[in-house]
Image (tube, rainbow, N blue to C red):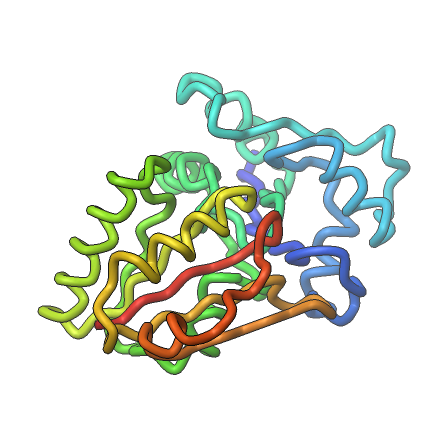
Length: 236
């Protein structure tokens, strides 16, 4: 039997109109699939219900893949595709396998001859970079920085130095409830000429994107971004 395909299906970045957030081809593909791998089965079912799926939800199989999933479980997650069924990989928000635990499943699919099909959709990292005015020719994503203030500010200074030497935009994220601390550390640790962009609630009605040199951040009231999905960008 020929293997199925592994479809990498983007999902909206928040509570937004499905048709406005995703291309029709993505919606059509997601509707027809019966097998999914997702970070959280409950939110994945809510996504499929909103489409809505072509299948009764009780007939849709959703397996979970998150940061706690052992590598030994990936074989079982990919089993539907090896058995000839198309399989969808979805994230909690945005594009799967980008700042997301799905990359291991994608790597296994390549090793086992399962065709991987990436589909177009919203990526908070690329949207933030597009809107920042910072360099899109050279950039790096660093995920989460240290949570402790001293370690975080040390890492920010390291990234700032690298950015200055390489003319590179540095991109990172934070657990939403620590966004306020991250912004405070940026204002404290970086040089006045370093440009900082804070991109919050991308694609949502409450979207806010602020990009300015650090010296201007220091003169302004800092925006309230706590507990709101945010991408941070820096270029020295």
